[in-house]
Image 1 (cartoon, rainbow, N blue to C red):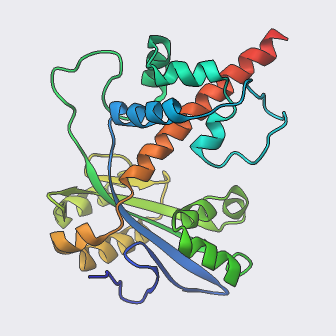
Image 2: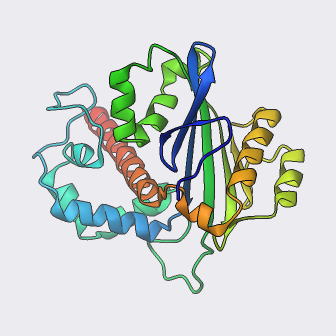
Length: 261
C-alpha cells in the first residue's frame, strides 16, 4: 500500500511529495521515527569506531582533506587512530563527553532505575525548491537517495533567499496512531513549539501553514497500517546524532590544537 496525499504528486513512495509552486516546486518530506536513547546512539558510534580504519593525525579546519566530509566515516577519518580506538573501547572520558553533548534521553555514565519513555513521531518537512535546483539530474539523484531532499531544503543560501525549508511538524504517535486531533488543535492554538505531543519548528512559525500540514496528515494517515507505511527514518536519526556528536568533538579538539600553537 502506497500513501498518496490529495493535490500532491509522489516523488518517492511513502516519503517525498511535490506540487507546483510558481516556477518552482513545494516539497513535503513525510517520515516516521522513534527518538533514540543516548545508549543507542553511542552503541552505533562505538561499532563504527571499532571497524574504522583511520588516518594517523587529526586535521585542523582548513587543512588538507582527501575528500569532502559528508558521512560519519569521512568524519572519523579526521581523527587519530587512538581517539577512534578509545571511543570504540568506551573509554570513560569519551562516555562523559558524549553524555553531555548528545541531546537525547538517557545516560551513558550511570545506571538508570527506570528506562526513559519512548516517543514515536510522524513528521512532515515542507519547503520550496526553485527551478534552478530542479534539474533532471538533481531530481534523479534525490529520488535515488531521498534524504538528499532534506539536505537541499536545509541549504543556507536557499533559506537566506526565502526558499528552502519553511516548517517541520512532528506529531506524537501511540501504537502507530496519531494522537487525538483535538489535542493537536489545542497545542496549535497556543502556538506550541516543543511538547511531547507536538513539535513545530521554527519558532514563530506560520500557524496557517502548520494547520494545513496537520490537516494533510490527519486526513490521510488515519489508520495504524497507513502510519506504518510511511518511511521509517529512525536509523537515519541515530546516524545524524552520532555525526553531530563527533563533529562537536572534532571542533573542540581542533580549537585546543589551535590554542596550543
